[in-house]
Length: 281
Image 1 (tube, helix red, strand yellow):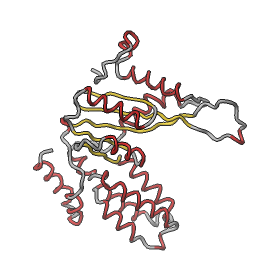
Image 2 (spheres, rainbow, N blue to C red):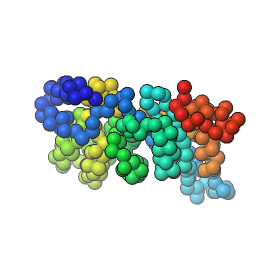
Image 3 (tube, helix red, strand yellow):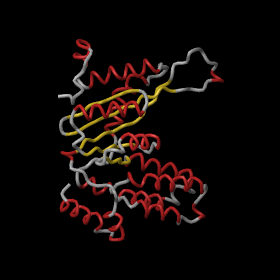
Image 4 (tube, rainbow, N blue to C red):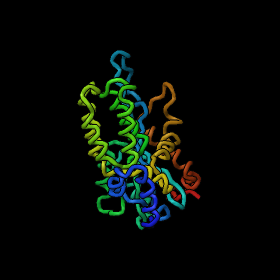
């Protein structure tokens, strides 16, 4: 985005808290121009796997079939993709980007904290420099809350610690948050290993944690919630009812048929067995 616009917002963010100025200004994640960006949300969603034979209840070890769902969006519209396996679906996503001439744009991936997913995206698009991963704020906040509940003593006693860490992360001051975690008094900790896990998670996720406040003021996305909605539309709404279980082929096929409908492609597919593979009008 225009530097003067970004600077004005960054000054506004750091104004009340000058001690965060350096962290906000030096956050490594740039501020993309929406009109020149393809926003991509990607996530796995699991449904119960169909057992080949009846299993006694006491021996039951539930397995799952995982669909990988992708939601791609820019000013032209949106499109949903579905398939089995992250690497396979990333290849399909690349084909869609190529078919729609979207590699002239920035690519912004919005993800949760799943390490394998982040690594797969980096590997698949390592050759393409204008690509960025952004960690969904909701998942980051939930991860902090989980580790705090496991690692700290009492909610009321440690409320200020929780609030401070999440405040720092909202402003993209990841190093400051890590230092604050390392300085928590022993009397407030019930399980140090859980706090260490959170520190390691933040260190690993630092390249994907932006200044969420600045992005909010600039009108940019902070969330993968449209991807979560795509999960519901393609998989969960139909396949996660009580008592349902699915084969891998059946689950992926039904979700893919649903994607045809949501993308406005189903008539062409049933008539010609081809699709436009373009944004729905």
